[in-house]
Amino acid sequence: MDDSVSTDPIIQLSGISYSYPGESPVLKDLSFALHKGERIGLLAPNGSGKTTLFHVIMGLLAVSEGNIQIFGRNIESEKDFVWVRRKIGLLFQDADDQLFSPTVLDDVAFGPLNMGKSKKEALFISRKVLSFLGLSSFEERITFKLSGGEKKLVSLATILSMEPEVLLLDEPLNGLDNKTRIKLIGVLNSIDVSCVVISHDIDFLLDCTDTIYTLRDGGIEKDTTVYVHSHDHAHMLGHVPHQHE
Amino acid sequence: MLQEPFAVGNSFIHRIDPRFRLISALLYSIVVAILYGFYPLIASVVISGLLIRTAGLNGKAVLKRLALVNGFVLIFWLILPFTAKGNILYTIGFLNIYEPGVVLALQVTLKSNAIVMAFIAMVSTMSFSTLGHTLNSLGLPQKFVFLFVLTYRYIFVIEQEYKKIWRSIKIRGFSPKTTIHCYKTYAYMIGMIFVRASARADRVYRAMLCRGFDGCFYTLSEFPSSSRNWLFLVMMIFLSAFILLMEFCFYG
Image (cartoon, rainbow over all chains, first blue to last red; front, side, top):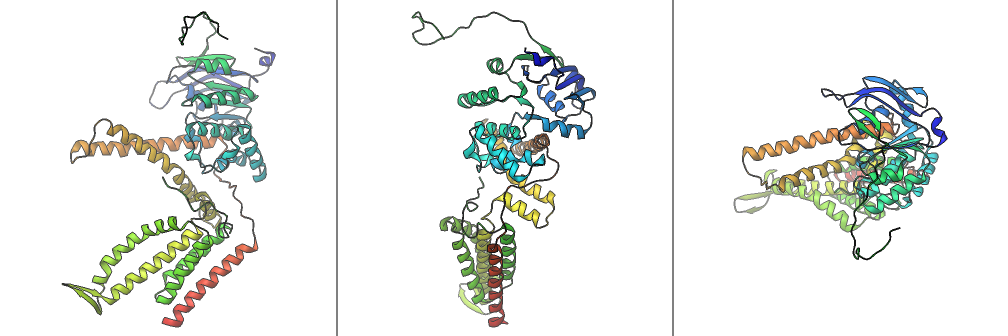
């Protein structure tokens, strides 16, 4: 880990508890910190509260206990969270939840317009983001007619157009084919933001993040043990002595 | 899948400010709706046809839409000539065909075709979202416009969800019969669609909050003010006045 970690955390959760009505708590006395430049992976079983954690950070779910600090500010009211949402971009698991405007350009410009940018600025930044993602030809495409992979990339564009300082990615590779996966990983590695990534794909997390955490019994844990292990693999002519890159 | 085949284009009509188009279409259709005389009615069908021409729309696609309307009109033809009593035109067996009925059915046919053609030419030449914003800028409440635009966006998702459930029902050997089991399955299906739609609405709203949604929609589409808009509106007022005048002159 580099030196930047020694600075104050940009997201700091302490003693967070959350439970859905009538159920046992999903998050229990959870503490977590994200520092500038850090990339954290979150690998945990289904139902362990990963998505809930993201929604708590964005203020979509109100915690029963605990303290949230974002960029050193105590976040309590809905008004505080409005401010948080301009700084942190959340990529939803299902792109269909995120894209609601008829055309791609409308959707990408939605965030900047809400942030009070003028039409001209919003268009400029939206076009910039789309071209960065190689989606320039998509501007006038109808969002619900895009393929699954295209939808995912466009949803990422709708987040990036708000120029967030932190990205929360909820299973970004879900249902993507190999080509789109590679593209998305390339994009994520080329943008300079701190991020937290939920995924079940260990290879992806090792590739894209510096640290991998897991959620257990409502709390967050760092799994740093290194296990030496070997892989079996098969291919044609495998019996011939050979080397792998 | 619903589509907007006419919304894309660069004709004279496509470039008119949507507000001017919507107002023109409303004014014109009100005038056509109160016509009775055949000359003004035929004139209005011709005018609507010319509007479609001006919008440069695909004739076949327009006819397809009109076929839909005329399906309803056909019902009038099956009922009115036999029921609106007056002079007898023909007698087929025990059925009398009355003149006022035929006249009425003919009027309905001409009117509805003229109005639908005018709307195709002036209103379906804008995208759904543009129509939403246009309604908003003409003073319709914002909530109504949200409902309008979002319903349009998510009707497809709900349709997909319906298909998904339906497929999973079908692959497990379901065939509709008049049994309690069947009705129960339908009830589950409809219930599940509502539940999923509401859960979806929740997630969409959250996603919108994350992107700074504060209750206001902003639109990107711009229609620069131009003398063309006024020219178009004046032309439509003139044409409406013309057919109205025809109505009064011929049939007072």
